[in-house]
Picture 1 (cartoon, one colour):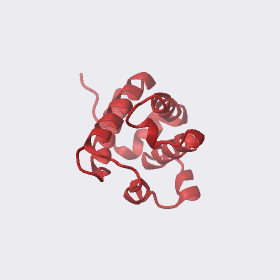
Picture 2: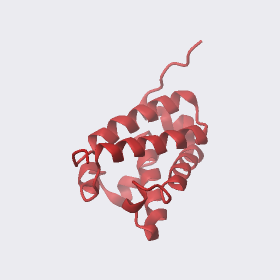
Picture 3: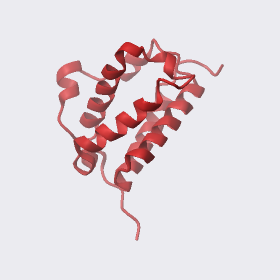
Length: 131
């Protein structure tokens, strides 16, 4: 029997704070040593970057609106415009997030929804041509 997909707005109720914490922590453990993505993240703001991503995902997937209360509208394209997001950077980000999803060991239905969202959003944020 296959698990039916859950609506995006219900992912938080399945994953919870702890699931999003595990996922984002697993992702950011991989970032500093990555030759492509690491340089895009100021080393003195990794904790801030981790907080922003976690709170954005919590909000986006049906949890408390702390991100909006603290940062306002996500404005993802504007916030990512300064970074050279090439197709290669997109692919690497998705690769690291896929590894983080595997490590976080979330409910498979939530993982499917999150993976789809990450792939589409990463593609949407590409703002530079291929190298």
